Image (cartoon, rainbow, N blue to C red):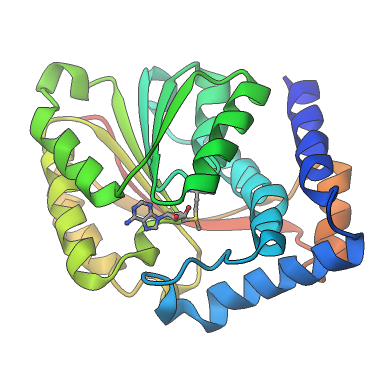
Length: 256
Ligand SMILES: C[S@@+](CC[C@H](N)C(=O)[O-])C[C@H]1O[C@@H](n2cnc3c(N)ncnc32)[C@H](O)[C@@H]1O
């Protein structure tokens, strides 16, 4: 498995770095990072990866960082290996659900509003041997539809993943999503929300935690050793991040 993951990381870098010099790729990595920090208020209306270079930075650098973060988190959470259906809302390039499904064999259904990420998710899942289906669409509409059709029996083997996606929604949309998430969790589905550890990114966190607490929700901050494959670690260092740990914040509604 380690070899497959290493090969995937290298192929991903080769695939996206092909049209950019290393200097250009590093510049785009830094620019996209700044976009998420400085232009956060625009995210719900304007996609941060709005150039080919930033899309390459997202797909080849930030997505694998998400992959390794989620892999470490999910392996420490109870019940995650029993999931057979994993619904990845705001799947982007599918990295987060790939990390979960790779070790568990869960089948992934991904939804994202951006066309290029859907193609990328399909490529990533194929490269990693994950069974997945990705569709372009609105994650809140998908959550509403799933909440309507999910019965108690299928909910018990279903997990809903929202990785670094809820913070991109405008407040009214996020409120609608919370209602759908409550409906799915109350029927027994597992829910895992992952966001950056920085508190200012998710001012809605406590509202979500309070709403989902009666269903057993708990939150946690994670700092896991950054055991990145050498090409990714080299890029991380060259971009100036020099991560020793991968960080995230999670809100988990476990199995009922
Ligand atoms: C920071 S990316 C995270 C992607 C992926 N979950 C990961 O962990 O790498 C956030 C994703 O959410 C998607 N997104 C934001 N709002 C959305 C919406 N209303 N419907 C569908 N996708 C949405 C964006 O297109 C983007 O791909």
